[in-house]
Length: 182
Image 1 (cartoon, rainbow, N blue to C red):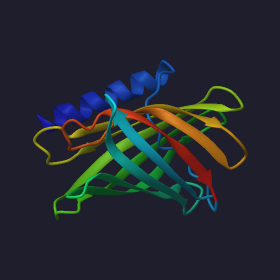
Image 2: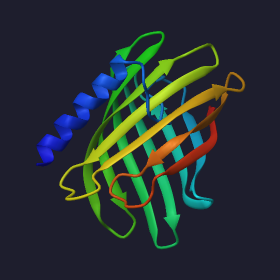
Image 3: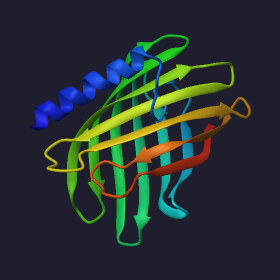
Image 4: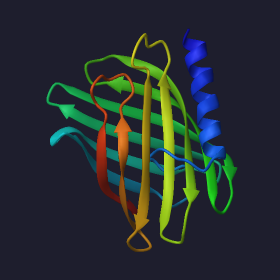
């Protein structure tokens, strides 16, 4: 059953990429020597679902590290550490694979895989899409983000979208925040 979910998710993601639809706030680009940090708030129905702090670090032109810390409440925090592998790098489209580890601060951890898409719409607007699947997770194994970013300056971007954290029930919510390229 798990294999069917992963295959279905990958097929749907490629179909969405081919129809220019998107999903995520994480960035698919890997920029060697140009690291970024982002902070966003995730809300639904007026209630804060999570506070997220994300970091991207370009190690080589084709390899990077992505980290994402999610604060859900005082007793429940999550840290994702992923290796980003560049698959497609074109002027207006980027596709990146993710392989990593999803850990809760209570000691539980799961391996995960995923993909990120970025599609340039104009000089100032990028659409971003992404998903990750927790391996060996019996339910709620799929996490995803759908969003866009707007360039405020050369180093600052406003980000907004919708995110659901993998492995968690009731964490879907609208996100808004800022990204800074260091």
